[in-house]
Image 1: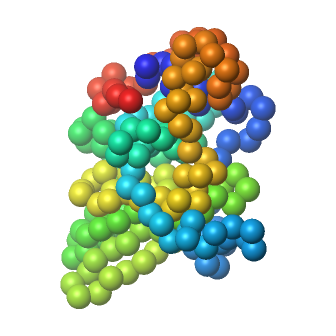
Image 2 (image 1 turned 180 degrees about the vertical axis):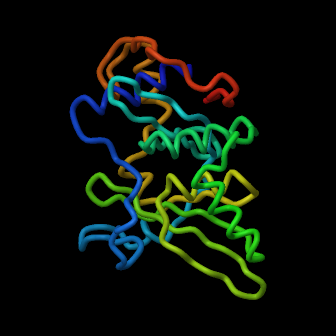
Image 3 (image 1 turned 90 degrees about the vertical axis):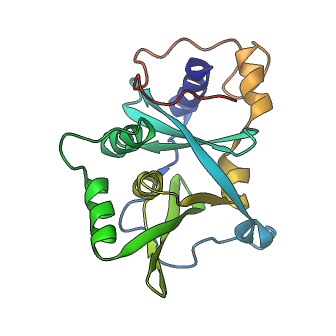
Length: 212
């Protein structure tokens, strides 16, 4: 199933630019924006996510972080660069990098200053860019910082922080279990029909398998 899902995530990258984690200069306006036709509650409703795997997409020269809703009914892929993928893969495998990664430095700074990450939120999808925030508790203060989901997801995995996404993002970029199964069974679905080819490169051997 992991290979099938990896193929599913790879197929859309051939036709369109994948949604990626937001750069540092992401817009600093309202975290989640709805148009006049959208229901404002799409930005207010939050859904908890679980990180299932990191899938390398060799031909697309990128990686996909695979998140699902807690019931496993919806998958949210986020495309990240290699450094973020490595940091997340180490945390999923509960391993330490031989040398500190950028995300390790962020974690260390937060902890040394007496803070803790309580929540990571994926707020919006603007064009092909995910925007988000990280919430930090420091004594009696609750801090809120703009953050790339790629970095903040790694920070969440270092502790017990929740990872949440707005209903708007999940509605726009989520892939239903039915669509994944229809692809796997060779029926019409996301990415076309027929079972996808195996990925030319395996995911990290100690990463947790996807179970849908």
